Image 1 (tube, rainbow, N blue to C red):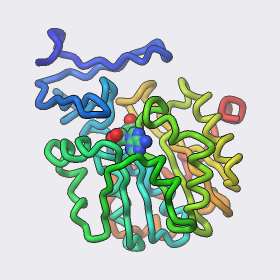
Image 2 (cartoon, rainbow, N blue to C red):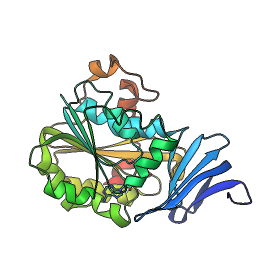
Image 3 (cartoon, helix red, strand yellow):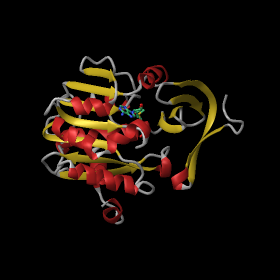
Image 4 (tube, rainbow, N blue to C red):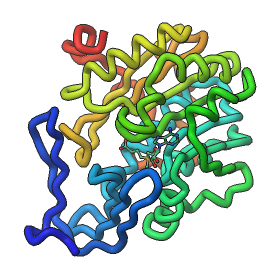
Length: 283
Ligand code: SAM
């Protein structure tokens, strides 16, 4: 059943705004031990997945989010071999990571196995690389995984999480970033989705402060459009253990041997540019 209006609407209370998508039909719903998953077919956004009523993925615009969560971090690292994704159950970030020939191991630690199983059925293109021999899927809490991680065991850690509430709240904490710092090798980079710069500047500010307090030398916030998330404008915040994030492998990015639909070196540079209000708003 879809609402009588024929529209899915996500209300963002703290933003005082809402975003709606015209629906065709609901094709799946289930309560998991962690969250309520719904899948819809829509008029113009293809398939839509929501968790607890919040938009996670649409066919139409997920490429921007997934490419910007992955490629800037991997091209900023000199030689990313071992990559960890925390969350990311729809597997779109995993697919982007596995496009990099340097990657030897891509581990994903998702709390809720059902998100991945449902994505395998309704988003086959996002999960198409799950059987790559370099991919390892684990279903457990990413906070505990990081606390137990071996020192210097990863080159890049990607935190593709839900909003900082409930089980994802700890993924934005200084204690978690300390565990990431310890688990990263030299030149290691952590990147996390960091919400809307218009409506959630305080989250980005506290995340940046926590990353610096955890020991990271450089912190940078990328901004990019994401029309199905609150305000239509989103960020990812990167932190590097011991090098500058303004340098990246521009040549490799320009001559990459895989397709992208949003990412290229110019978009990477553009996403690092700082709007005038950022320094004060983001700290
Ligand atoms: N692109 C999305 C966004 O920004 O709205 C995020 C998508 S992804 C589906 C987020 C995933 O993070 C969910 O599947 C959720 O189960 C997972 N997650 C939340 N807290 C977690 C934790 N503590 N450990 C591992 N995964 C977690």
